[in-house]
Picture 1 (cartoon, rainbow, N blue to C red):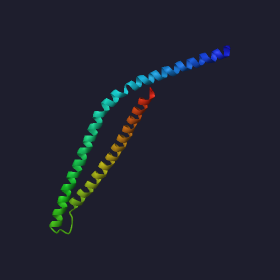
Picture 2: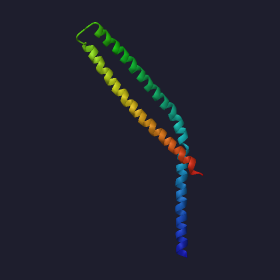
Picture 3: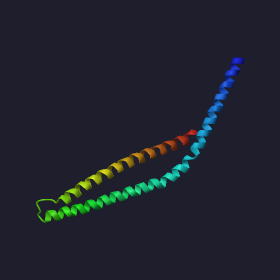
Picture 4: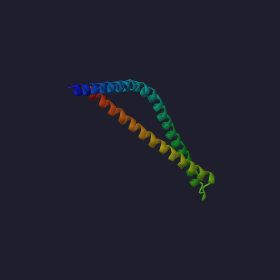
Length: 127
């Protein structure tokens, strides 16, 4: 009987340690809404900057196409080195914006999925 009592006390102490750990984790988790609240405006700014980059890219592409049309209309057989360089810059800028878009999308989808998962978990955890 003493051995069983000792095992029970040991288990009770283990439970207390678990509860202390869980309480520390809850206190840390209580800070998450504030961290999320602070992160959302920064994320919105990043998205707005990306929108501006897309708009700039589109505007630069339209301007480049206009210059190409003028060259074609002038029946010039050779495209100037400047126009070729501009075209390469356009391609480089386009690829950079594509990478930013892909990475932004991946982070966004991952974050939203985690928020939804957490919301669902919290909705179920205390039923």
